[in-house]
Image (tube, rainbow, N blue to C red):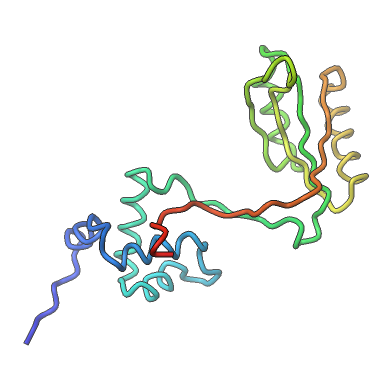
Length: 180
């Protein structure tokens, strides 16, 4: 009669190091699909892989420490929610002011994303980017105008680029092609 190996932190860590086990590869493939929208998503993933919830948590921590998983985030499909006026506002901010302006924009509730990128001269002078999402274009433009007026950004060159198409949005890829 076989006896079960006791489940300890050491055995969980050892098992998680075994990245070649089919259960761990299955877990990676499931993570690519996103977390189940239930009260205990880790438990559901564990059950689907034949693992214990604690083992899934140990694997997640280890994969984060190893850099396989850099972050967990949310993919919002704006268009399916009726949010179809999505504007990328590009700014040509003087380098000495870009951090301050970026922090200012990032604190606006209408701005959902704000980041800095190097200029690509001579064609692309813009170095600061922010996203404003809305149901209608006029609504988004009014929000932008309000932000510009409130923070005195009218003297900074900027352009508003509305998206016309939603490309495929997906999360990270963690599994080998044959395990998907």
